[in-house]
Amino acid sequence: MSHESDNRTAPTATAAGPGSSSPRAGGAVLGQARRPLVPADPQAAESLVSAGPQAAESLVSAGPQAAESLVSAAPQAADVPRAEGRPTDRTARHILFVAWRDLANPRAGGSEVLVDRLADGMTARGDRVTLLCGGPTAARRYQVIPSGGSYTQFLRAPLAYQRRLRDCDLVVEVCNGMPFFAPLWARRPMVCLVNHVHTELWGVRFPPPLAAVGRFTENVLMPRAHRKNLFLTVSSSTAAALTEIGVGQDRIRQICNGVEPPQPLTPRSPEPLFLALGRLTDYKRIDLLLRLWERVRHVVGGRLVIAGDGPERARIEALAGPGVVVTGRVSEEEKHRLLCAAWMLLHPAMIEGWGIVITEAAIRGTPGIGFDVPGLRDSVVDGETGLLVRNEGQFVSAWASLALDHRTREAMGRAARERALRLHWSAAVEGFADVADEAIARVGDARRR
Image (cartoon, rainbow, N blue to C red; front, side, top):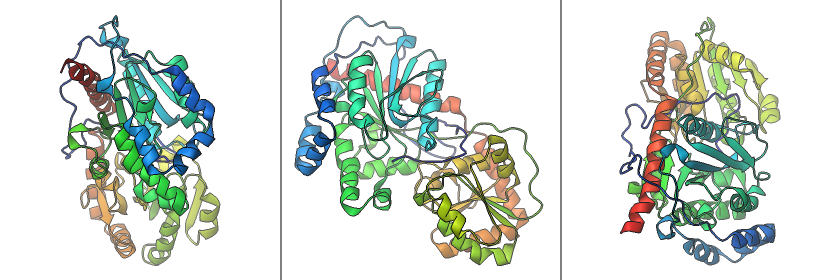
C-alpha cells in the first residue's frame, strides 16, 4: 500500500518542518572509516524466493507465532560480523533503497516522490545510489533495478539483492504497509523509512481476514524485524503512530516533505473555484466531497474542479452533479494554473503521510481545508494556513465561511505561502545524510561495545 497522488510535483523537505519539534539524527561521525558487513547467505535467500507464493501462504497459515519466530531470528545490524578493506572516503558509500514503486509508476505518490528526491540528492552529493523496486521504472541519475511486479517483488527483491547489491553500505527499506523484511536477508546497516502507518487503511482496502493479517504484519512484525534499526519518517503524526506500534522514540528520526518552487504565479479566478487534486482512490474520499458540495454550492456558487485519475474515476464521474468538473489527469502546466486559480484546496482524505498537494497549493498562496487526521495535522496549520475539521458538518461550515470571507482567505493564503517557502529539498537531503551517517556509525559503535 502506498501514499498515492496523481498530478504530483516533488515536495520539499526540511530536517524538521517549520514550527515542529522533531528528533534529529545525532552521533554521526563524518568521515569516519566505514567497512561493509559480511553478506547474508545467498542460498538462504534463493531458497525463500524459489519457494514462491506458497511459502508466504504457509507462513500466514502457520499463524502469528511462526511469523514472530522467523522475525525474531533475523540478524540485526549490531550482531553482524564486519569485513575489512573498505575505503574511508564518504563519497564511496553505496546506498540502497528497497521500495515498492518507482516514480514512473502510474500509481506513484508522495512516498515515491520522497525517495526520488532523497536518492537524487544523495547522488548529487557524491554517493552511489540504487533503487530496487517493482516496475514500471524509468532511467534516472541514480541506478534503478526492477525487481518484479506489485507483489512478486517481495519474493524477488532478496534474490536481486544477493546477486547484485551485496556491496551496499546502507539499506533503506521503504515500508508502505507491507514490509520487505530486509533484516531477514540483508546484513547491512539499515534504516526503515515509513511515510505513514496504514492501520485504518487495511480495512478499507481488504476484506477482514486479509486486513487483520496486514495490520499484524505492519504493527507487530515490521517493528520487531527492525527492532535495532533507526526509523525515518516525514511527519510528527507518523512519528507518533510509530511509537504506538512499539518503536522507541530514541530510534525515530524525522524529515519534512515540502514542495518544488513553482513557475510565476498565474491569476486567481474571479469567480468561486474550488479544487480537489490527486489520485482518485478510496481513502481520498472524493465521493464524500461531492456530497458536501451539494450542501455548499447553493451558498457559495462557482465550480468544484476535481483533477486527477485513479480507480475511483468512473464512480466519481457518475456521482458528479451540477457545478462539478472532473478533468482527469492534467499536465503540470494546467496543474499549476488550477492551483493558482483556486480559492482553496479541498482535501477530504482519511489519512496522509503529509499531504503533498496541500503544500503545492500553499506555495501558490492557496489555503487548504481538510479533516483533522494524521498527516494533514502536519501540513496544515489550523486557523493560520488553512482549516482542519472533525466532521462533515464542520467541513461544510469551514468551506462556506472561507469562501465568503475574502479577507481571511487571502490572509491564510499568504501565511501558507510563507510557510511553504521555508521548505527545501536540500534540507531533506541533509537530514537524510545525517541519519545515514548515524545508522552506519551505530553498527560500528555496537561492535566496539
